[in-house]
Length: 315
Image 1 (cartoon, helix red, strand yellow):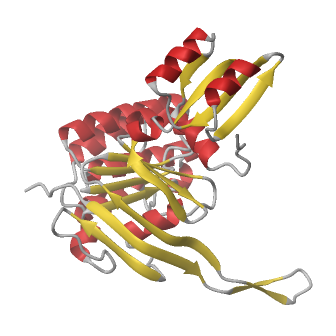
Image 2 (image 1 turned 60 degrees about the horizontal axis):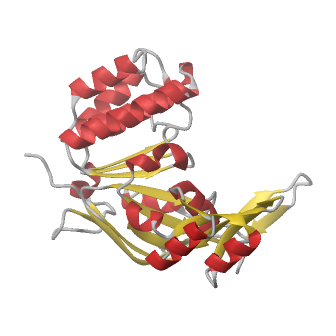
């Protein structure tokens, strides 16, 4: 019997890395103070949806995904994973971990064993495993399962990881930058396969990627992590409605912009383009068109960059 898609919830989660020591070139050890990966993170992952997990380097994305897969534990706060009405702490919880598949860029393969051995291991671990899907994808990606991972290119290792994630059909499937090693045709083949398999076998899928422009078409929900905190967690449509752009003469653009927060501004000659937070009312949209100001939508990638930027301009 197929298990219902898993959701997840984090409540006020803090993750500290402990104090560590490293050796300097002169042989004298130096202490590195504890760091904070997540700082009061709270969010809910909707079951049965594809959620994009976005954040700059070091924002805490990988730590959050590792918590959901029980690869690590929070310093404080709570993490629960599972189907609606039956969510549990994933740590050392065989039922939850057997239904959660985290795939990282490395593919998480056994380094000293043939790829076929890793496939058998995951097949034994995942109750929903599809051998047919695994075989078809490995043929599509032209992976020789008789080789050890070290004999494969980075792109082929990533392709094996993508195959594991899709073939596992886990109720919670997490891809953490797994496609970075792939070339563009292979990445796009993976995206198409993901959508097709998700449509036939619904589950919860989390996609963490820096290639936002490529994958945003897949997102139903979006989570943005910024400096260890959850900046937003909402539907992709709600995020897209957070901003718009105005392009026109400086005076006209500034008049339409009013007192809205300016996320980005650029000027070429007498033409100004600004990215603004919020949305225009119907009368404002009419006024903008009447003034010759072009109103545009803002892609998820641009909003993510602007919302997490160090120096957003204030109007």
